[in-house]
Length: 118
Length: 157
Image (tube, rainbow over all chains, first blue to last red; front, side, top):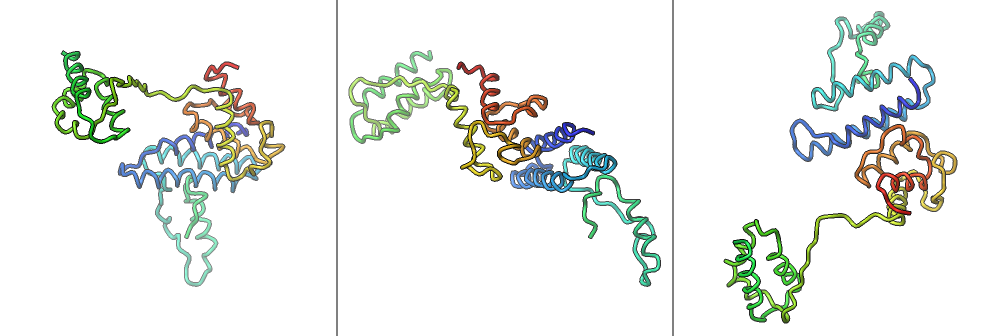
């Protein structure tokens, strides 16, 4: 994964943003979604600019490509939410907190890694 | 048949009495008979003769033949340079005072490679043609961009 590959990926996302049409074909939605794609790409790429660990870089590029493919397939640029894994919520007592967190982190798909879990 | 329609329109336009002086209507009415003759527009303008006579005023026999083909003004080196500088000044991470034709994006203006990608995308939008990745990475100063676009668009030096 070299610098030029990452830049090509960035350019690819921006080109997709330029020619995007929303599923509903309303001009307002198209506009909003285009801005969202460009904005999201900018913030995420800048946020992860300083990463030097090759594995994290690989995970980030996988996330980017997965989101591109999913977005193009479903015509929906927003991240696709998933269900919580079984036994994924922490108990009242907090004893099983770490196990729950581990389960949740493991079950999180690659294209949701930058997504906030709130 | 089309030439007959054309002749009818020109005669109707020339015979219109002088009432009001609408400059834009004049140019439009002069151009309309000269539009592509297959269109029914010229036939329509004949039938609208009574309405036109109140609006149109022709000064003498001078009906200007104006053909505006839908094309952009021809590109010159100064024009390209001007447009490139204009787009760069609009970019918010560049301060317009420091910007010169030979200022390097990374060394002089302190931008990084993501910004350079965004700038090249803005240039693609401005000039309306795609710049391939391999060449886009090498464009690091406004002068290089101008040179590249001039090469692509065959603008003589």
